[in-house]
Amino acid sequence: MIAVLKKEATEGQIRNLVGWFEKQGLRVNESKGEYCTVLGLIGDTTAIDIDLLSGLDIIESVTRISDPFKKANRKFHPEDTVVDVGGVKIGGGNFAVMAGPCSVESEEQIIETAKAVKAAGATLLRGGAFKPRTSPYDFQGMKEEGIELLKKAREATGLPIVTEIMGAEQLPLFDDIDCLQVGARNMQNFELLKALGKTDKPILLKRGLSATMKELLMSAEYIMAEGNPNVILCERGIRTYETYTRNTFDLSAIPMLKELTHLPIVADPSHATGRASLIKPMAMAATVSGADGLEIEVHPCPSKARSDGAQSLTFEQFEDVSKAIAKARSII
Figure 1 (cartoon, rainbow, N blue to C red):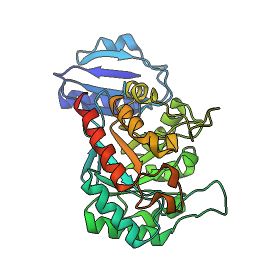
Figure 2 (tube, rainbow, N blue to C red; figure 1 turned 120 degrees about the vertical axis):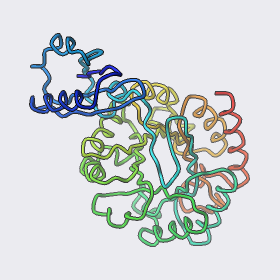
Figure 3 (cartoon, one colour; figure 1 turned 90 degrees about the vertical axis):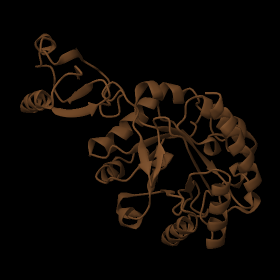
């Protein structure tokens, strides 16, 4: 249930109403906007008399909602959420580009890449220290050493770090990481999501390979229900019967999610397509579709990359894509 309060409602009146709701056994999610305050009521609201509530002087409107995701729901929080990642804002009109290699491979590689992508316009550095791979024989990442190298790259460039966490037991290793990425394979690792919800770290939550938008939002709800509001959603393509691309880039998810949730939404054209030649048009398409940012894989020499070389851009290609993104942003 959602109760929209009138602009003239005093803080005392709001606190009294919130206290009454809590006595009814409800949790209250309060969202203060420029023109009104919205109270999202979570729990069994069947005993709440809508007519009684609507008759209160401070109530503008009362609505029952059936969506199972509450905290992530735009109805509960009409204004866009802005997530701060190491000083870089994402959402609410703020656009961010996360760029870097699929895997951290060496100190020289990650620092060289960080400097190049920053010069081309990237605002965050992405790089994998722990790598989930389909085959147990593929490169699994540099792990703890990779995290330390990411920190060195941040020190050299000032770019905040985005990197993937694989399990809740790894949290101590990520104390000094700016944004923790939950990969597609872990989107429904609920114990991990609950553990991340107990932190205040920004979380980049990727859509699962075959997940619906509702399932993505419910995974975000797991994090938010534990107290962490700093969630960024990522559309990275879904599995279909198509074989020419790695996945099928669900561009429609970006404007649809914008209607459903207040959380920022970024797009990952690298994983969505699996082809370097498709990154530029898909990055532009995601931008004009309303994405709050992009995550793009960049490598000094993609042909020698230890993972995902086919979808990685060279420094020159990334610079070209960055210019195209800027043009796309200028028309929206």
